[in-house]
Image (cartoon, rainbow, N blue to C red; front, side, top):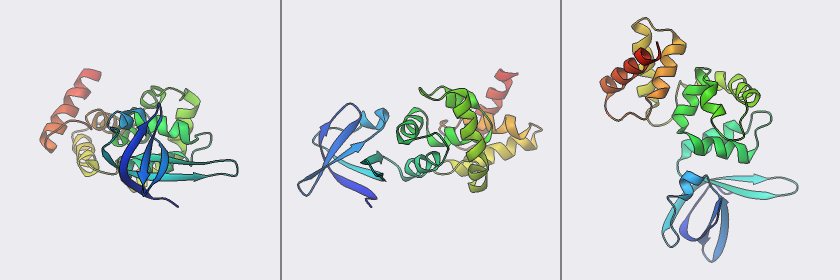
Length: 191
C-alpha cells in the first residue's frame, strides 16, 4: 500500500494531480483547496489513501496526516464514499468538522455539496463517540479547543454551546485568551 508520495507535480487536472516518482506518474485525486496550492513543476508531499476495490484502484491525497486520518474515519460511515469524504474534508478544516460532529452542528456538514440532512445525521451518529473518545478535536489546535470548551463550561455554558463556540473560533490565531474571548463574543452574538 502507498502511504505517501513526494515528487514533482507534472500535471494538474480538474480533480487530480500527477506526481512523478522515478519516471512513474501517480494520479492522485485531491480536494480543490489542495489542488489550488499544488503547482506544475514544483515538488509536493502528499499523504495517501490507497483505495483498492474489485473494480478499481485510486489514490487520494492530503496535505496533512490528520486530514488523511479523518478521511479514513469518514469512510467508515454508511453511505459515505471516497468522493463525498474528500468533499467534506475539502470544505472545512478538520478541527471544525470534528467540533461540528461532537456538538451536533448539522449546518456545517450540510453546507458541503452532496451532504443532505440524513447523511449529516448519520455522520454525527456514527462518529460522535469516536471523535469524543479521541479528544474533542484532534490535530494541531486540538488541545487549545479542549481548553476553550473547558473554560466556557466553567463559566456556566452547556457542553453543546461551548463546543459550538469553540468550533466556530477554531481558526482564530493567537493564544488561549484570544480564543476564549472570541468564543465568548460568538456566544453573545448567538443569544
